[in-house]
Length: 246
Image 1: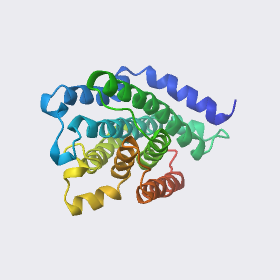
Image 2: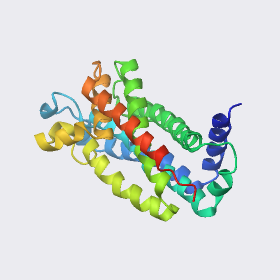
Image 3: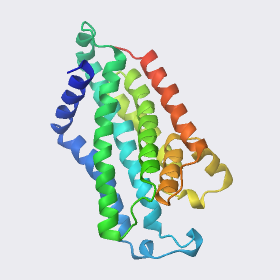
């Protein structure tokens, strides 16, 4: 078993020992989806949306919420908490590199969001008759890239924040604007040209657009895939470059 695998397994076990993180991380997105699905008007086809229902559009947004919850709130708090408690300082004396530690954190969050994605799709299908994604491969590619891109942004916060409290604050500052451009408050279909352009170049906005394209049976636009890949590479490199042990 490699160091990365061991660290990922350990981080997953530690996550499930924290009831608050488990409740927020695993419960927020499903609760939002169910609450929206129970609104009668959200289950009615809309001419403004090309015959789609609002709940159909919000499934990818709920997936984005699950990704953001782990990447921008839980992940930074965990790593910053280790830094404040001196865990990272002691880890520095071992062969573990910053990239290995941050990679383990990202893999743990990715595993959690994969489970959440499956749960959200199941809830949407069984409770609200939302069709399953028509382009499964495109949906999975979009999900992986959206998770990696948003997770890389969260890793920058994790790499620099001196305490879990500061990490939480910075994470929240990023959390709400990124969800706004992902369409949580205003669906992308109703954004004006300026907001839509910003959304296209944000990691979660590009992620939601790609998930919606794949759900409809299309292949995600290359622009959105390139945006998410770019965020992953640049933000991931910055997180590894500026990582501080203490």
